[in-house]
Length: 301
Image 1 (spheres, rainbow, N blue to C red):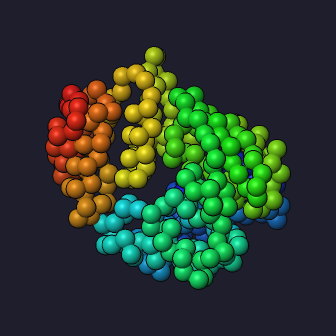
Image 2: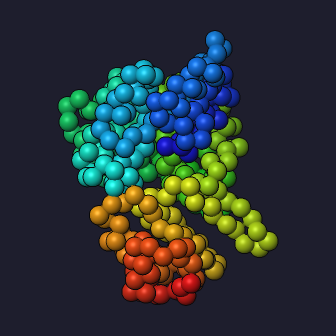
């Protein structure tokens, strides 16, 4: 959510004065503070990140903010410990989509928990974005990932729009596609969007690239999740060079923590030559087991 918010802010702010909730301000009190202190008469766009740990919380936030447009980036296992099951997570996230007209909503068609709900009558006219399905409103027809960034073409209303960004990874491409899609729905000029995209930098600690002598550090320390980490492993597997992973695992997975970390370990094993597991926990124990049982176990510290 935060990366998509940050990317959209950079695009909109080039066009008209824009305010966003900072960092991870996404609760009732923190959002109220931003509204009171930062929204000015000249503000034309307000981008508000919303979070929840139980059903009803996002609905409460929409009543506070009264959004006109909405983006649903993903539904996954993150915070499952609090939501208890994925049905609760899904219903909670769709409270945002239910708060705006369907033609003003944009959702991730590639997400396995979002896509099935689009068959319901009230969601037939939602806008969608995808890296896989050409039926999406916004479809990334082709893209090239490199250590230096991404080149891609986005199809919208049977027109192709080309973009280049220094952002890294498929997850960033998905977030960026959501931001571009919303900017186009808001009728921001293409050249304004293209210029903003070419100068974007990652949100702090979210696939942030840092150079350390000859090494490239991918800092994804803030808030990893199973889906994002899985995609990062797939991206890294395609790139040459020696790779090292430093991780404490993923928090708040509840009863799925052991199985999830075991499968992530099996997937990560062939990608890295060395893995440093931070701390002693159920997470790192199962990661280590999965790493040792992988097709090509790395050195583990």
